[in-house]
Amino acid sequence: MRRGIFITFEGPDGAGKSTIISMVARQLKNALLTREPGGIDIAEQIRRVILDRENTAMDPRTEALLYAAARRQHLVERVKPALEEGKIVLCDRFVDSSLAYQGYARGLGIEEVWTINQFAIEQMMPDITIYFDIEPEIGLKRINQNKGREINRLDLEDLEFHQKVREGYHILLERFSNRMVKINASESIEEVFQKTLQMIEKRLAEK
Image (tube, rainbow, N blue to C red; front, side):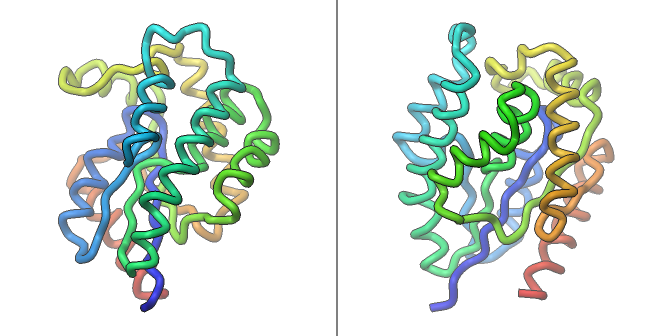
């Protein structure tokens, strides 16, 4: 059986990833929708610890290690089996999030966090990564206006932190230009969805 395709979705908070990925999943046949941290029971338990608004004392290195641990379990229990079955795996966040958030914005170092995650993923990288780019001010405004959205510990960070996250992603766009593509997430949901779907279909046709 032919191996499936691993597609990840990245972006700053409030970029609209979760909405777009759900719309894409409904359009693609044989697609599996999942998320990080989470996707399976053990990783969801770790997610609750990481994002709990009460855990303000969490050390940045602890945070990075917890993300890597959740990622490892999710990868071996959900992502790899689905790819072996030939599915298209659509994952809301993956290793790039750790590099941008903990590596760059938290100041741990992109290379240091990359090393941690290499142990966790064993060279398992996405085939395609869709990065939704948005100015932090707009993303945070969307979060505050979305009353049904979960407000987690990272959402409570100041504007400077979220600006650094975006800067980190732009560094990754240059480093991983072979697999990462940027989409302007400040446009309407329908426009972003159509551009995302077109980009994915183009990449799938090339595989």
